[in-house]
Image (cartoon, rainbow, N blue to C red):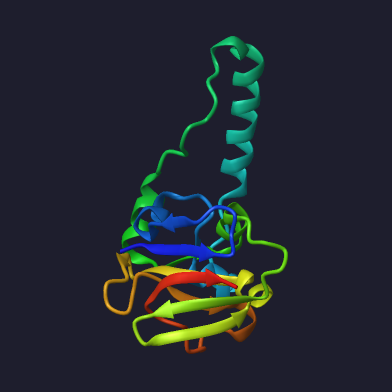
Length: 164
């Protein structure tokens, strides 16, 4: 289940939403639409972690390798299996480098085509996981907009994104 970005772009790309669960840019549905209800991370633990990393950098400078992946903690693993997650579309649009003349994004779905202004589409968020499972039915992604709230009717079953 992939999503293609093509059309008037410099680099057509293929997205695989099933691997986004490991991407640090993902946000939970609750974080996006109800940030006031989400538990805040333990700031004391984060501060201690930052101080520890700073100490390691200064003492063991020559032994440090660049970070490859953030390791998953137990809490994060539990979240992955229970929550719904979204990914902002803007970084992928930036990577594909649409031509400056592009004004529309045509979304090819299971139920037909939807045409949106390119700027409006760039503000979208793609739901790729619901209750800890990839979207199989009406998937692989659903398009939401932050300004329309969580009760909006998303565009479902997006297979291709064509910039015109």
